[in-house]
Length: 463
Ligand code: PMP
Image (cartoon, rainbow, N blue to C red; front, side):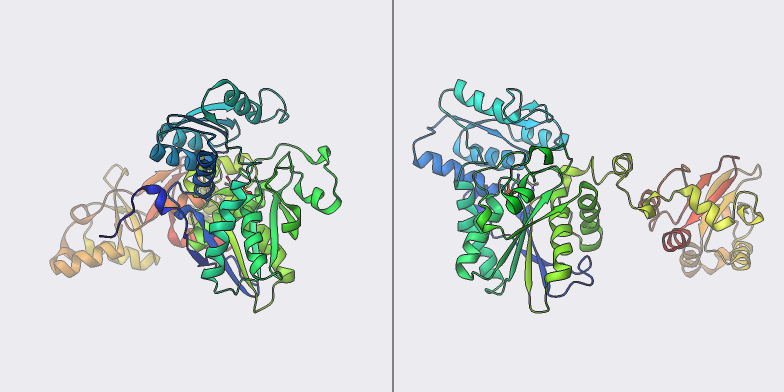
C-alpha cells in the first residue's frame, strides 16, 4: 500500500513548472516552484510544522497547549493543520486588510481568528503583532511561534525548499527569486543554494510601501517609505530576524497593480491559479531578467500560494475596476462592442436580424447564408424572442433526419440567447459565451436589441 500516515507527511516536494507564455522575450529557462501543492495550499506549511517541532523539542509547548500567531493566513493554515495532527488549539491574529476568505478558511479548520486594524504602528497595542504577544503572555502553555523572528522558519527552507530546487534543477539553477515577507523563504533557500554554488544570484521581491529595498541599498530604515499597500504576504514595516540581507543580492519593487495583472495572466496564460504575491514575484523577477538573464541561465521563481484566497479581490473584475487595476482591454464593455460593430446606434447595421418561429428550416438556412451569419434569434408572431438557431445545431439535426428541412423552426430551435447588461466587460462576456451559449443579447439605451457573438468579442479584443 502506498499512503501517508498523516496529511503533514505530504508537505514539500512541490513541482517545478516551466513558464512558457509570460516569459516571451526573456532569455534562459524560467521555472516556477508551485507551493500550492502543499496540503494547506501554501509555502507556509513547511515552516509551520518546523516551528512547532522545534518548540516541542525545546519544551516550550506541552500536549494540550495553544498556538498563537500573527499571520496573513497562510502560516495560520499550516499551523492549524499541524495542530490538528498534534492536538493543539490555535488562535490567530490577523490584519483587517486580509482577504475574508483567508479568515473563513482558518475558522473552517477549527482556529479562532482575532481581526486587528491594519493601519496602526507595529508597536501599537491594537496591531496584530501586539495582540498575539499579549495573548501569549496571558494564556498558559501557549506557544507564539513568531514566524518573523523564529529562525526555524529559515531553517525549514534551508532543509527542504533549497535542496528540492537544487535536486530538481540538477544543480543548474543560476538565479532564485522570491517575495520577501518574513524573509524565511528567500534566506533559507538562498543559503542552501549559495552553499552549493556561490555564484547563484538571489532576487528578493518587495512592495512599494515596504522598507526592505531601501534598507538593503542604503542601510537606512526609512519610516518615510512605509505606507499602506494592498498586496498580501510580502513587504514589511519591520526588519524580521529571518531577513538576512547578506543572502539577498538585490531587491526589486513591484506595484500592487502590476502584481495583480501578472497574477491574472498566470492563471489565464499558464494555467497557474495562484495568489497575488505570485504575480509580484513573477513580474519583478521577469523585469529584472530582461536585462540580466542569458540563454544558459536557469531562473527559479517561488510561487507561494493558491488563487482561491483572492477570488473576491484580484480575480474579481469589479474589485479590479474599483482599484483602477484592469488593463484597458478589459475595460471594454458590451456597449463598446455594439458601437464598434455597428458604427453607432443610428447605423442601419445595428438592426437585429431575426427569424420567425413558423418558417421552415430550409428558409432559415437561406437567411443565415444570405446574411453570412452563424446564429440567429427566433421570434414569435408578436416579435418576442422565443428561441435561437445556430448553423451547427441545424447541421446536427439534418444529419440525424434530413426531412427536418421542411419542419418549422419552432420544432428545432434551442432556448433563446441570454440577455446581458450593457456594462458587462469583455472578460465577463467571454465567460458567458460557450458551447451551449453561442451568442448573447444586449438591450441598448433605446431598448433596441443587439447580438454579440464570439466573432464580435474577438474583433473587439484585437481592435
Ligand atoms: N506570499 C505570501 C502569500 C505569504 O503569505 C508570504 C508569507 N508572509 C510570503 C509571500 C513571503 O514569504 P516569507 O515570509 O517566507 O518571506
